[in-house]
Image (cartoon, rainbow, N blue to C red; front, top):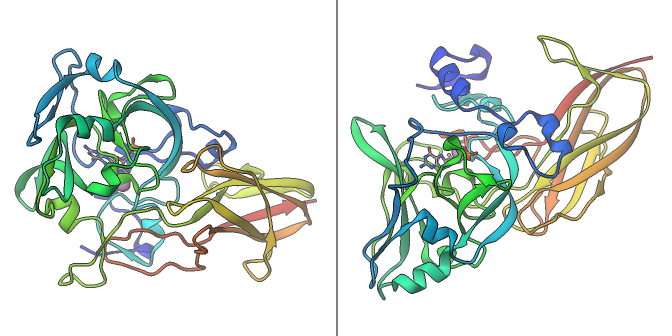
Length: 354
Ligand SMILES: Nc1nc2c(c(=O)[nH]1)N[C@H]1C(S)=C(S)[C@@H](COP(=O)(O)O)O[C@H]1N2
Ligand SMILES: [Mo]
């Protein structure tokens, strides 16, 4: 089951990679990622939901209710830019990885999400006193270890009641596309991608810890099969660089003309604002501060720039970020069985021509 980086990509992994595309890194030039350039991750098949007969079920509450899309759209609406990153981003950069979506670095994007806040709806439905978590069930189904299951995730009640958690029906001002969760998805700013349940069908309270596959088996940091591991929650601090210069085809090696140039990229963290981005132009030996712009919203990426006079020759560029919690990207990330949370510094090799 384990794959080695040096062995390349299997056809089974390619089948996943062809369905679930990444965001081309040049899209980081824009504050908001166009929907068609935003990364995608579907575990199973995209369910095609007829919005006219669909309703969201709030079951198990004190006042259970079903809400149509029109009823949800009639509620107070909020719009926020939010950076989403898959917890498996960087998986294929690890020495070994499990069979799963073989991301390099492109499983990230920042869209403007519009929806209605979740907390007031939960209050209206009446949260039973013994509730510890809220379970979100998607309409997509698949098999896990031979068992049929829905894509389901839970949130601790305190997170579900945050006022920035949204039930989203629009992305970048347009109705959600089927692949991004139409007609309704969850957005929990700051958390890794698996939290933002797409194709929502049901929301329910639970008085016990939710033990569904995507909670208790997947998305946990483990070094051995037999340990329970720690659940993945907020995105680790990370920065990426727009690869400079021009690419060769098909190798995608970078070639840049000598002289003044501006390197740029984005940085984000689920633990708050980015405090600092540094750039290295000599293979991570020396680091210099980049210019950091404020982010437009608490959980949207920051833009950074770095002026560089590129001398002719071969150069190993890199960027790394530090967040408000004091966390900095490592040179190499801690390996783990699922290949999750690889937030190692981004390195880009360029050939500078005179
Ligand atoms: N119902 C459902 N929700 C889901 C998923 C899924 O497979 N089914 N994938 C999750 C994962 S792992 C990620 S990273 C994000 C990706 O969201 P996007 O495809 O809109 O970028 O959706 C999450 N929500
Ligand atoms: Mo993901």
